[in-house]
Image (cartoon, rainbow, N blue to C red; front, side):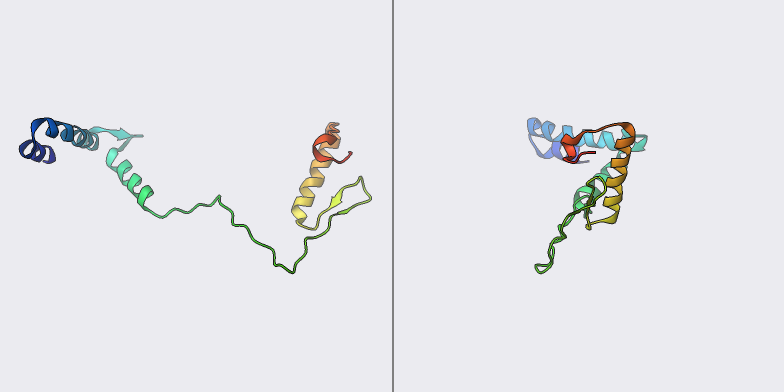
Length: 117
């Protein structure tokens, strides 16, 4: 219908330029499938993506420490010079497991960590 309106109201060279994208879009809506689904579904999802609200889960917000709180001091343990960080118990456990695994494998790379194993 839109191609007919272009053909009747506009000069031929302008009508053809405008009719080609409209006809291609109409052909895609009628016959083209994206991953086995009709093209209209892909167009609907595209509009929903571009004009809908987005939730960015990977962006982390920085939480500023209160101005009165001081950063915890790093203390070293008498055992193998392993630092005792009070920041996170899980991080401490993961670090100590990594050190134990490295000892079992015989890796003694002190250039990356700065600690002797």
